[in-house]
Image 1 (cartoon, rainbow, N blue to C red):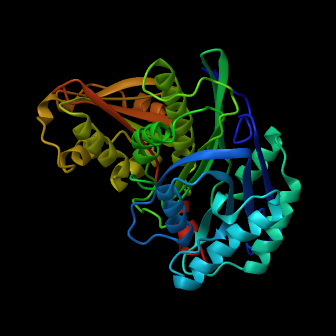
Image 2 (image 1 turned 180 degrees about the vertical axis):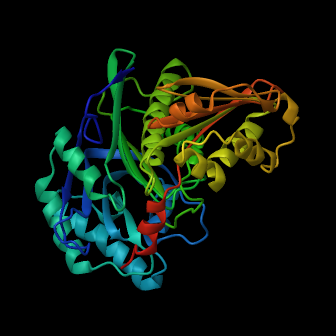
Image 3 (image 1 turned 90 degrees about the horizontal axis):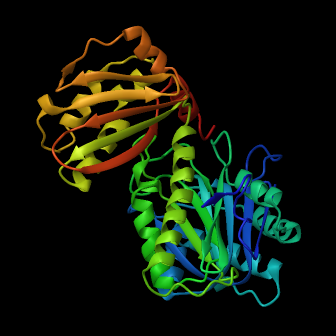
Length: 411
């Protein structure tokens, strides 16, 4: 697998992208609309928020996915979520797709355009700005890495940086590329975080197999991150495959499917980790690895419990090796285990130190533990010694800035 430097949604063959300032956000100079376009029809796969309260774009995209529609484009806006806006919001969302199709021309229909929105809940889309933005985007489409980067920047809300990734793999005699972009910084919680992600590939792959790969990879990537225990109304992970790589179509499971799935998992996991690291107010990425569990499900539950604990998150922020908080979080997770079998280690670029052996403190150096925790990326490894199953979850520390950002989000 080859990691493509500066790669994103335009890395795969046949995809164009653009970002634009349409005037949706209060700061009018900030980009707030993005477009991803394929030169040929694509098969689509996706996963969406598990929140009962679903935004208008989510509801429509889920309907198009269920219909098995081919897709040509995804148009996205930031600043307004178009959630909890009732029938008027549904109509606004349809108009957004129609404006995009009209701007693209060339026989593109509104049913071939997916939509995604992120921002303030309860506000209507400013349709004059949406129409203006659709025209700007269509006129600016390009297949360059810079165009993909501008699209990734345009979907940011409280994000401090865009999130992009792309890889290529050999499939038979062809080179298949997978590239993606994502946004997410707050309202991030497992079972679809508060995120938008568009992933493109030039692979020729059966629609059902693509959906199976996407659903499986999401479980170990986007569903394993958390910033603040809030699951959004707008979460969408959309994957498009246009077949332009020229590979023999992947129509059954086998070596080609497995290589594709691994590459897709890498892209999704990379984007997920970038979201966790860029959590609102965060100063570091916090990774929890739980191994030695009886089942994968129990490992997942325990790892998520660690990264979502506010007490663990504040200890990580304070560079405090307060390991009791980690064991405590595992203890109330609902997983049964013997605490006097657990080993706990922390590691980072600064080194590694075992804090706990068989449920009790080791004779570790607090000074060195503080040094390990001071790094930008910190990992806690908990070995339950009950089986051979493992799971990894990603979160971030909890800082004063998280409260500041969310206290005045609308104002």
